[in-house]
View 1 (spheres, one colour):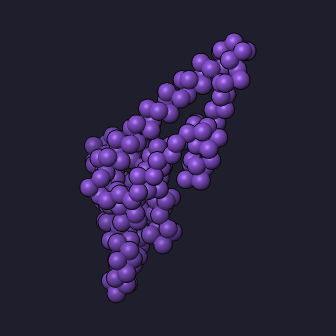
View 2 (cartoon, one colour):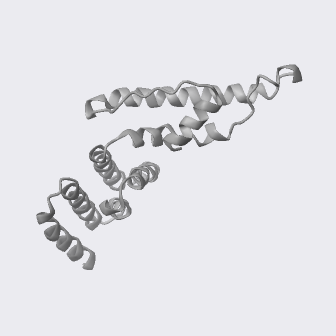
View 3 (spheres, one colour):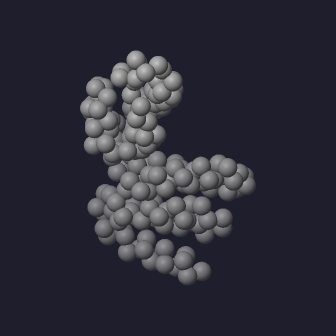
Length: 180
C-alpha cells in the first residue's frame, strides 16, 4: 500500500495519520515497535469489521463494512517506504547473510521467508542496484552464489556512494563468476 493509498484510507475512515518524520538507523527499534503496533491495530480493526457485519440493521449505518483496504495494508511495506536507499541496502545485506545461513543449515522455511523479504526490499530499490540479481545470488545453493551476492551488494554501495571508478572491476568479477 502506498502512502497515497494510506492517506486516502485514513481520510475515508476519518482517522488520524501521524507523520513521524525521517528516521535514522538508531531509530529502527522505534520503527519496529510502530510496525508491531500497526499490525495489532490492523488485526483489531479486522475483528471489529467482522463483528460489525453481524450487528442489527439499526447499527448498520455506523458500521464500516469495507475490509479490502485493511487487507492490503502491509506494515512492513510501509516501513520499507520510510527507509533511505542506504538503509534498504543495509537490510538487504543482513537478509543475504540470513539466506546464506538458512542454506547452510538446510532450513527451507527460513530461506523462503528470507527470500520473500529480500524481494520486498529489492522491489523498493531502483533497478540500477540489480535487486533481482541479488535475490537470485543470495538464494543460490552453491558458494558462487554467496560471492556473487557480495559483489552485487558491493556494486550497489559503490553506485550509492557514486564511487564509479570501482564499478568496472566489480562488473568484471561478476562476469567471471557467472561464466564459471
